[in-house]
View 1: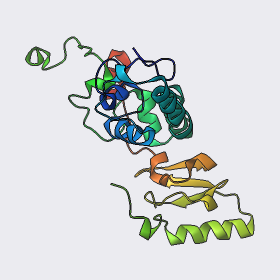
View 2: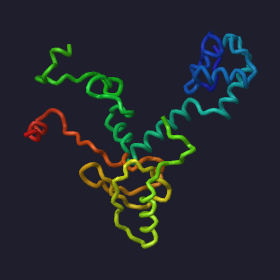
View 3: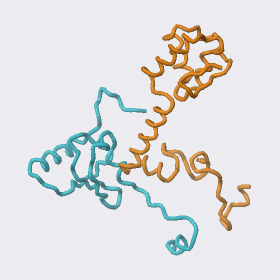
View 4: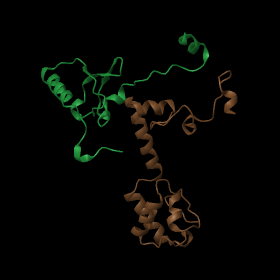
Length: 127
Length: 93
């Protein structure tokens, strides 16, 4: 299996889809990368030559923010929000939804598994 | 949805005036304001504000990182009373 940027090992799917396994590359950027590197996007990833891989790697290195660097960028943005104490930062600190979603029900992605409170009205109905 | 760039940031003119006046006179008093929707512009850096949250004025010292946010984002309007435990029951009464 080919390796790009050390960590990512896209498998034997079409290049345009296997590139999506890189953090920060979606379908759109994958297509654009193929174009820039002059690779047929339909070609299977295992058929990529060393040359193709080198071209992709240098493109990703120089023109795009992906993987660790992107992760760090995201973390820093969140840390900035937390530090300045704005509303979004407070929501991040509390682990609640940041973009105004309801929290009376749902919001489980942010809040994590349900913590049932004993004796609370409606607990039976929730089951 | 974001705001159209054509319009530029929403800044309350009166607040800009106040900031300019405070700058000129060297007044360090917090600037009292109800303009929560006003965008923080670079002119506000290093100034103290007192932003209304519906009840009180929340003091805020504006730093560079805050530029581009709205004043209201820094003055929460809701109070969360803790769930569960004796403390919550006591504060209910």
